[in-house]
Length: 338
Image 1 (tube, rainbow, N blue to C red):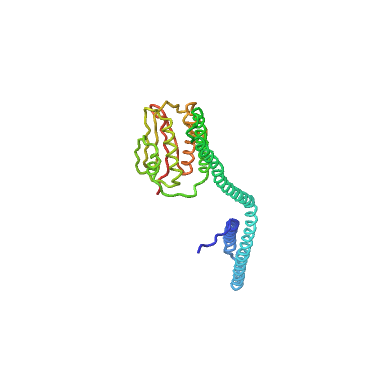
Image 2 (image 1 turned 90 degrees about the vertical axis):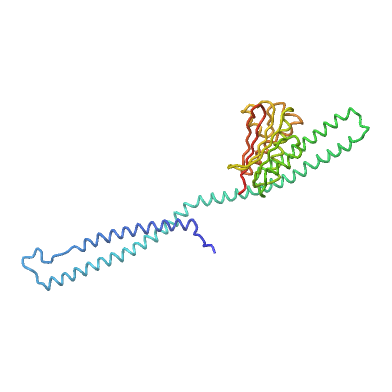
């Protein structure tokens, strides 16, 4: 059974009261020591008299003096104890009042902070519901449009001059689907992960690279903890970008592994030279380097933005450096599972 802890106000009150008690005890001790020294000084009743005093009289005087000393010391002790108790109680009262004044603003800040957390929690819940609803409301019409286009243009008697229009409409529809899917994924990764499970980045990469038969891979074990679907999306986005912008005579290379600073996925491709100052812009949404990275073939411009967002939500990092000879080397690191 856990013991109930005192409130902050009570703890401050005890601290203040204890300080008052200690101060009072020290003062009483000093006063007692000084008074005892004074009243304990020896007295010679016969000093200054022309004739030696009577011994019986001297003894009576000494008895009275000793009794007076004892009464003085006892009185000092009694009144000192009473004063100590009163000062201590006064210290507790003062500490209670001071603690209330000191903790008043803090209590207000605490209430404000709790209210802010509640509003944030409601906002996150609203965002999750919005993402789920938007995913349905936006993707369903596009899927219907794509089906209608495919059915409408499936007629073998379709004039040849309409075929480019069909291809253009289908490509536009596909690009809109990728854009919406990327935006929804990006919105999803901006919130904290709710489900985590042990995953192997090598297995995720092996599954994702099945759609890219020409990619060279060296997939060593890379254990991590997180959302398997989001982490697989990281590999897919990196491989898709690398293949899309790769030099036709070059190659794409994917490597996974683990080290002291976590597990990693490295994707590199060949292509034109990229200035180091331009690389950070690739991780910004809808940012492209030049006109060569525009058009329907270049996607929605969210690939690396999603990669960085997924890495961050997994407490990892995503970085890119220009590759010697052209294009990029992108490295994503995710903390290894314990």
